Length: 144
Image (tube, rainbow, N blue to C red):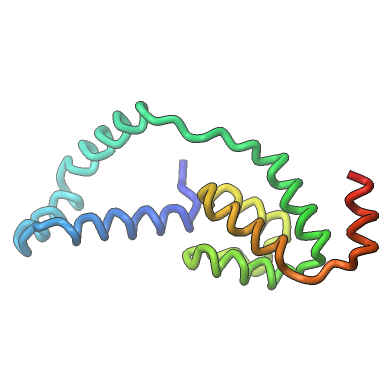
């Protein structure tokens, strides 16, 4: 299973940063690089990560209802695709949505790759953007 490219890049940067923050010498770093290329280190590391992951449980996210809620929020605020991409980039600079992606695809990708804190920040920014007509706001809230 291939990881989504933005998540893969973030993971790679995180792993690299961890290695660079370690107190390995230059010769140890070269040995590590050699082991990664030709040795068993990749397999052993994969095994350790799988073992550790088996003790964790991802929070269950109701993506379909969350996606519908985000779509409704964006639609109510009448935000453009470019505005949404700018907001997402301001929250997560690593995010790189495809230019040809639909609004739904952009929101879905963000929903799948974001943390709960990033999602809440996104909702807060959208909720505070734009001035909604009080009359229209009353009508839309009455329908809910």
